[in-house]
Image 1 (cartoon, helix red, strand yellow):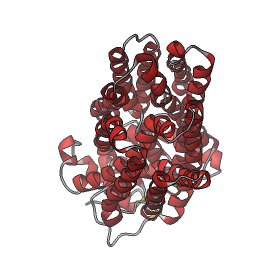
Image 2: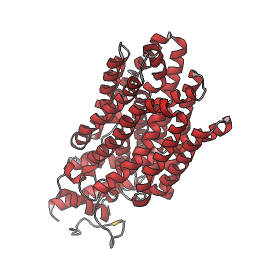
Image 3: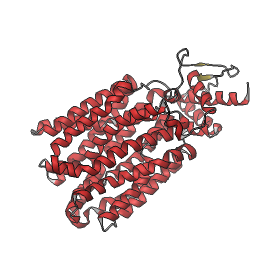
Image 4: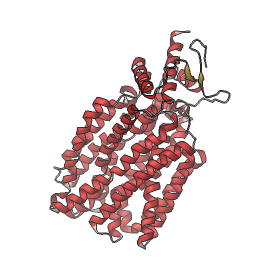
Length: 481
């Protein structure tokens, strides 16, 4: 058996053994560490929304200035994502996470010393550069690490922490606005934004690199040690004959194709990217409007300022439960079916929220909007990660997310203050409902089902019409494309 072919067989053997692995304490530890990454990100992204109303009164902001402040962070996120996909595929997922957290935490801390809205906009933009490096990474990491049948539920739990964590900046802002003079109270959440720097210590010590990235870099022995440690924890034998024949075909093809961004602009990856970017854009439009302008919109609906901030935070807490539930459902019933249900119910919730006047109906609409709309992200983003092969996954994920966030978090956020003034909050919610359903439609029609198969199979463009799935294959077996 030629050396290259033997190495490909060994690589797929390690991946097949990883994909059959039950949940072990090491896997749980990785999910916890990635949840901490999202906790740091949630606090940083969620800072502006709760303090925006205080800044508007303290600095007498115009609608244009509010729009720029709301969109500046996301503009940085988009710009940060442009090189981050290339960095992730070349230097590793782990290094990018550490670098991104360090950047956005330090710059957010500096935001507490801003004296003008233009300074704060610039600071939020540079903080966004670090956020852009981090935001998609836990989804990509879990897609490459967790076993095939538990990918969505693992992402669901981690994303549940992320979504619920948006309650923290709301609570911090609510406390600061009540405890300090309005002229300085908005600075306190920015000071607290430096706390995520402490997370760099456990992440540096215990977060491993993605095994699939390590194999692409030829670090086979590192992956072997990790897989054997997981097998010992799970009580599984070190089966050196186990491979997934479909995944082996994908790995062989990857050896003869150099990964370039140009490949993402050709079929099938161009079509896949557009479809998943559209549904992600719809989800992010809902998220950004509620996260950044939620308190402002609720104040227009008659809420007191403190109650508006708390209500928005509670919606994020409910969304965390929706995220966990979606993970379980997507692994059992499939990504496509579950996303359709979530987008449909979220659209209904947003439409009712705009029309509701009675408190009970308003609470019901808020539940639908938050549980299904804000809770849609585990599978919405995991599906993006599953569209591309390992050699292109970093570039594909970051390109898709940057497109979605440009349309939702930059363009949409900038115009919301003007639209609120012209239309009022009720029509804004009707617009959200239409956007959710319209942008999900391409995925409903053309979306691919990627549940229950390895990420190699999910991301490839090969056809497997005559091949079975996972089965033992002896190392001496000849296997060529």
